[in-house]
Image (cartoon, rainbow, N blue to C red; front, side, top):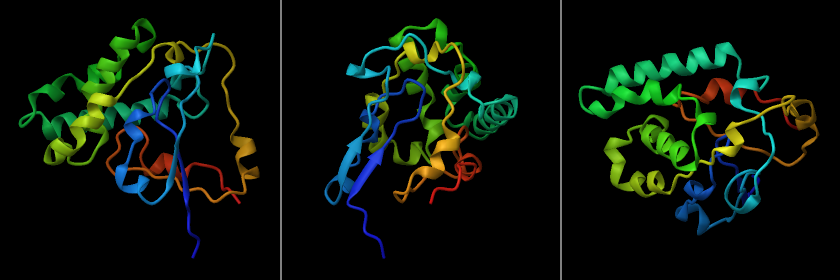
Length: 182
C-alpha cells in the first residue's frame, strides 16, 4: 500500500482562490500544499489566461451539459430553497464583465450546487462558502488556449483526481477524461 504524506490541492477556476480547500482533518495527517493559481490572490495578474470558453475541453458539449445539470439542480431544490431560482443565470453570467467582488458573489451564490446535500450540512460548509474568492482577471482570457494535456503522461507521481457524483460542472465524466498518468 502506498502512503501519501503530501497532498497538493488545486482550486477550481479559472480565477478561484485556494482558501476554500483548507481541510483540517487531512491537515492533521498530511502536509497540505494548496496552490494559489496564477492571477489570483498575491500571485499577480496576467495579461491573458484561457477562459473555460476557449479551453479545448470546455466546448459546446461541456457547457450544454453544465447548464442542463444546473437546470435539474434548480428544479430539484427550488421549492425548498427559492434562492436557487437564479442559479442558471449565475452560471451563464459573463464573468469577464465583472470585478473581483462581482465574480466572488456569483461563486458564493452558486456554491450549494457544487456540494452534495449542502443544506443538510450548511453549518459545516458555511465557512468554506464565505471564504470563496474569485478573481476577475483570469476570466478575461485571450489568445491561444493553454493546453498541456499531451504532457500529462510524463508525470510519474501518483495522482488522485476527485470528482463529486453530483458535481454539475466537472463531475466524474470529466475526471475520467484526464489522460492516463504513469
